[in-house]
Image 1 (cartoon, rainbow, N blue to C red):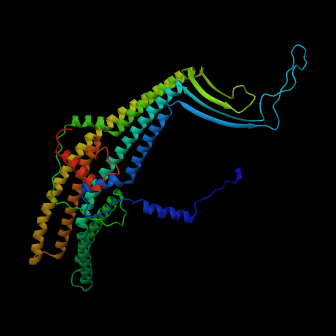
Image 2: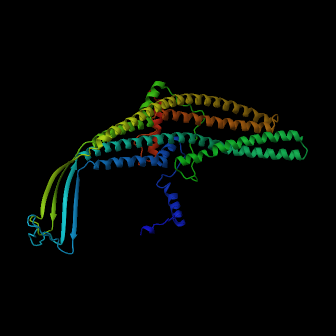
Image 3: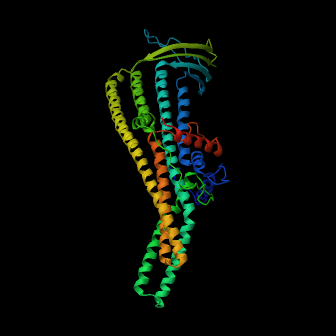
Length: 480
């Protein structure tokens, strides 16, 4: 039977069944998209349905379940045993005199051939209780570490959603215009080639014109490449299938960014209190300190008390049922020799965690400073992009008037239309970058982008309203 185990890969039908099951399950039990999605709906759907976030939630739930399970290790044991023993003949015995070396008794037996026995024993080891208590505390800290990792995943997802949302909004605004402009460029290209072939215009002028058109076409396709994947990225973050149709709420351009009036000192102190990475190191330090307690307990003598009820079917016994009780102490003296080395190991781990905490604290403070500077820089870029977009829009109006009056060429009109679309895209991208920098500002401080009790039980509309209230209140607040 040991040689019967062979390599058994999944069959094609099993792989197909798994693929079909996953295709359905990956988006199962989700609320359908019934209207345009705004930024808070997108964040709500990501927190409710994003699979990476669900993995973090399931890991946290597993660690909490392990804490509940570890509590049972502290309980006494209550063991029930039952058994049967039989033999083909009686287990008789005789005795020999030590003085005369003669058999003093004829063979006899005190046990039946078939015996049933049962017992119920209650026991409690004080040392095991102490060790189980320490391990349960460590499991509780591991559950808290899982919660901090879930917070980190959630903040990352919120950042990605905000960036993808504003890029997708820009795509919905501009992709149709880019496609129309690309068609106009292609038409102008065909006309220029036809005029050049018919000798209506000089070959050099036609080639220069075609070179400008190709540059415009290249810029259009570069912008399309940057925008066309934004909506698919947003759908993936919301856990929508790539072929799911949905529209976005497209806010008017010109919305002002929220002001950040927090002092740098307050931001750094907030980050040092709330960042998930620093909290995780603190929990690891507690776990390591508890490991020293476990080592000390392991070096102590063990004391076990027990009591039980017994029954034996052997009719030769005077009492077939009885109670037993007692206590037992034991001590593995060699554990004392391991204790100093164990202590040094725990101290080395503590030194490592402390240095890691300091290094992470410095990195966190640097991230807060950089995120604040980056937000200010993105605000300046947004202001510049808005001015450029406004000026380019007025230029296009002038060029359109000149083209209608016949004083401006088609080539100039196409160039300025392209410049206008580029300015609009750059403005939208700058706005998306500023929104991302704003979200990153709070993520760098470890401030949650969601309520701590976010679960899959809350519907999207309620969760979206909660997120809107949180972010608008955060924008209006002047202190942390």
